Amino acid sequence: MVMKHEIGALILRVVLGITFFIHGFVKFQGGIENQAAWFSSIGLPGFLAYVVAIIELVGGFALIIGFATKIVSILIGVIMIGATVTVKLPLGFLGNGQMAGYELDVILLAMAVYLAINGSKLWSLGHLISQKDSKNTTIAA
Image 1 (spheres, helix red, strand yellow):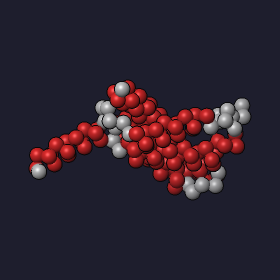
Image 2: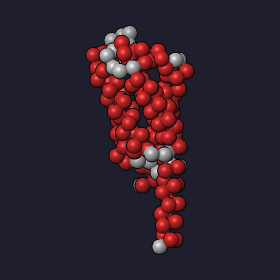
Image 3: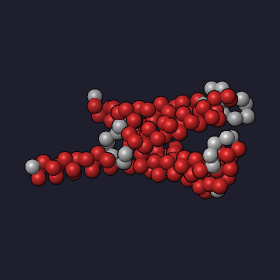
Image 4: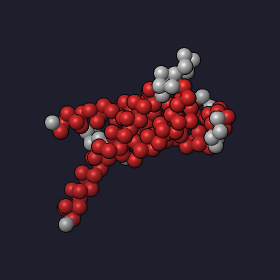
């Protein structure tokens, strides 16, 4: 039973990680200055574009390898709430025909919340490190 939950968490972690890694990569590839200008145009400080892009890129990679899963998931959850409230909410759940709504944002938020609460140990660098630390502590004691 526990293994099923870990396999599910692994799938959520890796898919969320890949999704955000690509989003962060594209923000830098397309010119982060353009993202900063767009943030400013919607009333947000431009520097937030850099913060979001770094969290997406580095956090996405961290999720893929299973490092700091709970912390990164909380940060991604905050980003998704921010994106939904500042940009997507007025468009409605399914969008307005020209832009997507917030349905994908809600799905990504739900994935992040699950991982923030439960974590993901299977094939996780963080779990591997904590196991080595606990073994070293037991040996030293």
